[in-house]
Amino acid sequence: MLDALADFVERHRRLFVLTGAGCSTDSGIPDYRDRNGDWKRRQPIRYQEFVAQVSTRRRYWARSLIGWPAFARARPNATHIALARLEAAGFVHQLVTQNVDGLHQRAGSRRVIDLHGRLDAVVCLSCGIQVDRAALQEVLERDNPAFTTLAATLAPDGDADLEHIDFSHFQVPDCAQCGGILKPAVVFFGESVPKPRVERASRRLAEAEALLVVGSSLMVLSGYRFCQQAVARGQPIAALNRGRTRADDALTLKVEQYCEAALNGLLERLGLTL
Image (cartoon, rainbow, N blue to C red):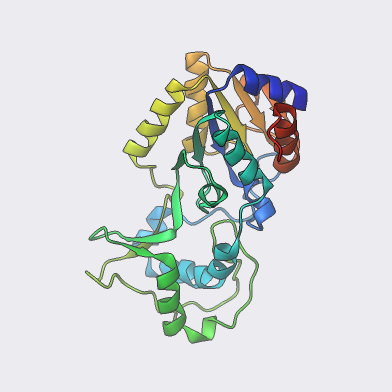
C-alpha cells in the first residue's frame, strides 16, 4: 500500500492535503471518533447553547481551565513533521486542517488553512477583539482558585472531561473592552465556517492535482465538502486513515495504517528522509 501511496504522490505533485484529529493523537490530543466513525464521547458543545446559556459557558470555561495547560504543552509529532517535509519538497500545494491546535505550523508547514480556527486565541462576540488564550488562562485561574486543583482527562477540544462538578459559582470572564461574551476562536458545532475561509480553500483545491486526506473520518461536512468538490472535478482522492471514512466509495486509494508509520514510509520511498 505504501508503494501505491508513493506512486499516487509522485503522479500528483500538487496535493491538496486535508488533515483531521488522527494527525494529533500522537501529540497527546484525543480524537473524537472510533474506527467506525462513531462518537467516542458526548458530542462537543454547540454554538447556540454556548451563546444562549451562561450555565453552558460556565461549564465550558471550567473544563477549559483544566484542559488548557496540557493542550498548550502538546508538541508536533512525526506526522506533522512528515507533512512539513512534503511541503518543503514541493508536494503540498495547500494543507487544510480541521484541527485547532496549530501543530502543523509549529512543525514547519507554511501553506496552512485552519478550517475550524485556532484554540490559542479568544474572540469577543460583540466587538470582535481577539485576545491570547494563554493570557485568559491567568484570569480564569485568578477568579476561580478552587478549580485550579482539580484533575481531569484531556478532551479533544482542549478542555477536560470534568463531570459531576457544581459549575454554578464559576466566574466566566467577559470582554475587558466591551463586556461582551468571550468565545474561543474556533468553529463550534452548529456554527458555520466563515465563508471567505471556505472559498479560499476551495480555490486552492481547484488549483491542485489531487486530494490527500490524512487522519480524518470526514464525518463532518466542513471537511467532507472538499471530497465532494474533488469528485465533481474528477480529481483523484487518496486517504490515510485507520477505519471508515465518509468518502470511502469515492477514494482512488485508501491506506489503513497509523499516520506516522505510513508517512515515514512515504518519505523513505520519495527519498526525503534525513
